Image (tube, helix red, strand yellow):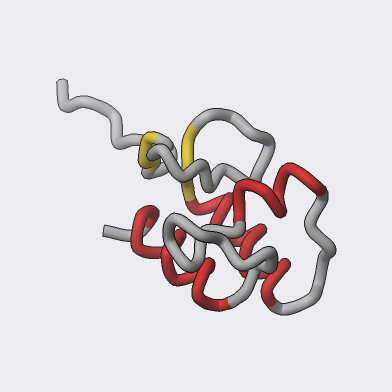
Length: 79
């Protein structure tokens, strides 16, 4: 019998943690959706989401979650 399809595509965390949803140790589409809502101003990030979601500029985060951070996360989630 064929193997079942994977439930959710996931990417292991890199050294720049970007896990903003439930801190489950993986980065997936749920993190992307939460980050998108933060960027659109629909929700306010908590401290952990702010720390994990602020990835731009790489190596020197700027203290805010914006579209540049969303693009970095999208590139790691969507191949």
